[in-house]
Image (cartoon, one colour):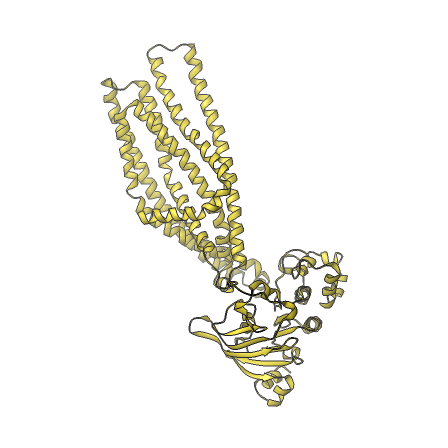
Length: 580
């Protein structure tokens, strides 16, 4: 338990910087919670003045003052409660937004391998929902703790003012509550962690169903996806039932303790009244305070679960924020001058995604400025991996990659990537307009430069058919466009970036012949006066490359021009003939 307390203390210390900017509002919210809790004791204490009525000493003054006092304190309590909740929620929403900002910033700068091992559901839960849980739930529980803490203190004072004997008896019973807490906490914590994983899976199912809607419809996968979701939902159902059982056991223990406390008080109160140690007014005041005290105790199981959930969410957030990316700009790194870029060299490059399972072995080649080199070969040979190492999506396991004679690991990462324009097989388009997506390549580009990029990417004919031209909304991920149109927008984005190195990763492999002709023209425009690395599936698109490298099983099997490789009648010639 001590180790856990230390851990919770460390979590609060690590997340404190996010709460610090909202300290004033947090302090107001928690400070106003003090009278909210304390006023319960005042209201309970007022009931002891029933003795005045019992003694026949009740006059008009008492008839007016006591009800007015209770009404005033109740209204004040409600006002303070509203203000406390308002400031607490204001601070919680601010903290949540700051956490989401920090988490998204961490996501944006994460290494490629982080995304390789993460589902979309996990991203939604860990980078979004956890921020709300950690901030809102944590502050709500602290606010509740302050309210109930001062309620408890004020009511205990009332109990002792009325009868110290009954107070000791009723409070000692509450010690029973602490007995099952450690065991239940461990079990509920485990269940909450498993439930979060299941929730991530459910979110992933929904996102897959949405993103893959056309595949689902064309292959008739509706029933299959529903069955997958049902399996996960049944797992969540089972976990939630387990949590309900644990909470129920805790609630049963709490109610049992409260019942013993009340029964003990009732058993002793008769003797105290008959012996003159307690009056009727004191009894009523005591019982009111006791019932007010026991009510939040009986609700403790719900708050206990929420507190554990908040701490677990905080722990997951801190795991992300404390994780440093492996691929960063090292101290002393030099910026890459895009205007005087030199040759790209791979020297004995070995790379592996997983230990002892290399996907590239001894890759060596050189690309001179203005030269185009194409990589061809069977699927899974390592072509895309080779080009992914140049912009440092991953770092080499062994060997080196240099640009202009400087190892890419010794270059400023931002300047390196700013010197590379990439066109992928499936270019990702963001929600917004065509203009927005093209301008992502260079936010500072002026209108003439934008128009030149559009023209070079062969988009003019397509845009002329749209009423809003460049300002046409394209939907999420460009869903309203054809594959060829999306590719040309991606090429326009690369054009406007005007980087000296261009990487084309199977940019035409998913297109039909008609679209490929248009896109290929745009690509040839893009390649002019650039250092170009091309991964190609259709060999007809790279026959004019200055050099072609045949990659097989992580090694370069052949190298040469199209004519040279055809004359050798080797692996390349065989590939080329199969596509004719």
